[in-house]
Image (cartoon, rainbow, N blue to C red; front, side, top):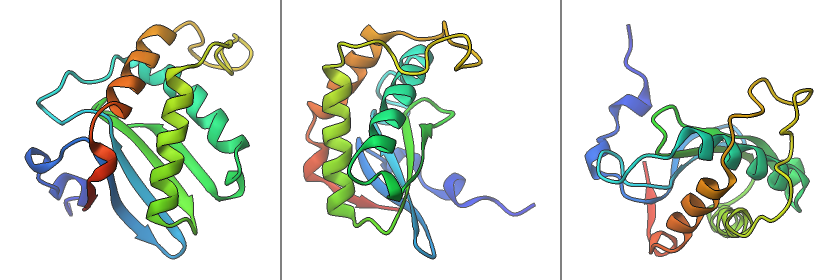
Length: 148
């Protein structure tokens, strides 16, 4: 079986940051590493679930809502994937920073956190989500432009 591209990336070289992991036609998959793989503590799954709900809501309602295809957590709990259509790296970098700043200061109910809206609606932790968002935005990642 052919090895997939993401397993071919040397994760010992990845730092916090935003990477372009794949481009297909007009779609770009961004690898948002919130923590350094195999070095930093990975995301708490409840925090990741909360970030997913808030982040997806913000991104799909924001100024680039028609260009957001997907936002969701990595299985390894070191960050998120963001798939966009026709957005350049500088725009995405600003969008990610703004989104995570909003998550870090979120003071409303978690969107989609009702039994009717989510298959695991109690599996959330807003405090840890805010801490994780702060951990990411308070680092120097925004000055590093990494590409896979």
